[in-house]
Amino acid sequence: MVDLGLLQSKVKNMKLKSIKLRNFRCFENLELDFHKQLTVISGGNASGKSAVLDAVAISVGIFPSSFDGMSNCEIKKKMQDL
Image (cartoon, rainbow, N blue to C red; front, side, top):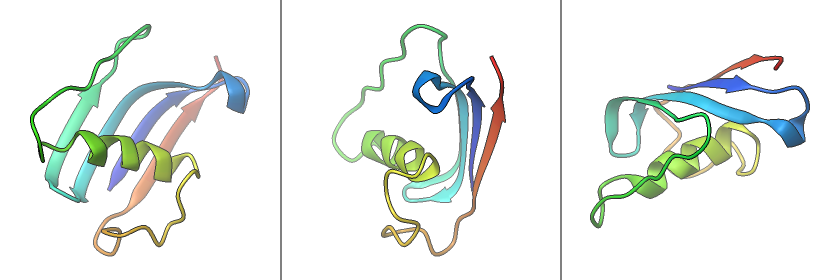
């Protein structure tokens, strides 16, 4: 499951507030809260940085839902007006 807490007034003004991943790529269960101005995702090789970014991209429609690794997970989005 990919569960996003999003704030938006228009698609171009979207802010990511939080993300919850369950059974997505290398994560059984991950919850991240993002800072309202800037969040840096860093880590060693194969630590899951790209998996977090891919989950966000899939959820906002940048990648197709048939993206590799999606067979056992769900994507859920939470959106609110600013």
